[in-house]
Image 1 (cartoon, rainbow, N blue to C red):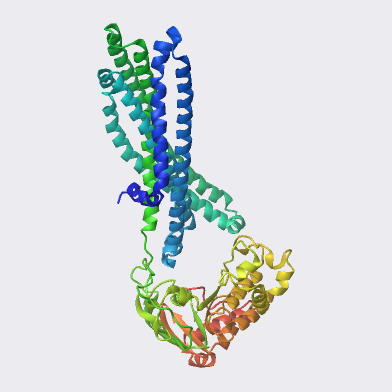
Image 2: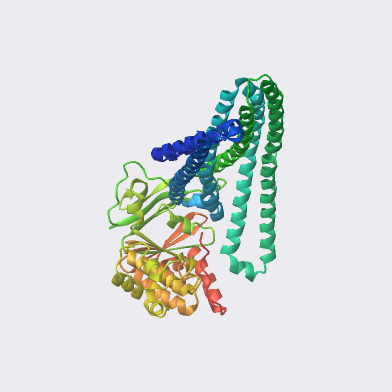
Length: 587
């Protein structure tokens, strides 16, 4: 469907607003034509003999009031319509985007998505609020002037308006060109947003590696590209006004040639002819504006295409029709012949025929070298991705057959890269349970060894922690994430290298907090510290997407296989005086 027609569906619920705006536009168009018509009695009656002065004066005031009222109401109601449409569209776009799978976000940057939500939807709003309003209002005004021209002298009107169709063809051709160029401009703005967002988010690394000039050069290149595409848009837009000026001049000359003959023959009065010429000149403004409106429509169409492209992107992880709620976890989690391959995996599976059964209450440590598939395996549990082959079962139920809400409600996650929000400490702890009481929030914080540092903050639990919690240390952020998981009270727990980037003191506090969190829960631990591995009920060793070993710490050491080699490598590092190295970065 054409993006503009599709956009109209969002305006359909507001028919009363549209009807009111249209009625106000009719008032504006009629009043504009009436003002031009009043020139005739001014020249023919008021100025020569001061006849009908009171009537004409009153009429001028009334018509100006009606015109002003029509302009105000049409602009106000069209702005209202635009904001309503954009509110619905932007909300739907945000909700739809947030509902996409992890693979969707892996393919797109935050800057690109924000550009669609902010810039492109903003273009659409201008189209609805201003462009559509101008299109209707100026069209009705042109119709009013044209009707007045025909009423005064149909022949003269025909002479003056014959040049009008000449505008249509170049207007249509330029419209297509403009839509293409406008899309390129919006893509360039998207790249600019991406470069800026990436640099701002990674500002510490940028500064640490003295890369400010390099990032500035990337931004400058993106900005130059945006400038060039915007100038292409300007070039296309600048073609029409000179064309309109030339056609306007032709129309005036035609009017003078024909009209002088009509006056000489007594078929037109000077007042009628002056009214005709004035109407013709007044018509030029709306017609010129309409050519600009067409340009705005094409720019809005390009923006709407990009918005609807995102709305038409369907998540790879969908809730099946008739999906049932998953009862609270009780017995076992099973990975049955699980195979997984990313879309751009070039034919190589990240996981290959992995089978694993985890009984309730067990602690499973997942180890392996970089790229072994550790994080991918645990990401299948909450359906951040769906398996390519095999199945993931919770208490015998395939996770693809249950509702996403009931599945994810049962899984708590603590990752190495702690995600906190620019809100209060209390709100961050209660993120998974916003209805939690202050007593429950504080109890979770105490269990996570976070209460002590929280009460030392300026506003205690009401302290705002900044974007991504940047006003807190790494250990403090991690303990808040653990408190959040404790409060959630989910029976299944995923710990993805939760202590890998902490100093010794912070690690001890976080390990104590994790011990409290893991109590009476079934835990999947992507292992980083050997102490966690040694305490696990089961250790699973992944190598290039395959499960190559599983068992307890002592059993696997005795076998002398892949786990023993990882163990020796870590303890060799420890004996060398350094800290134990990880079993492997997240895979």
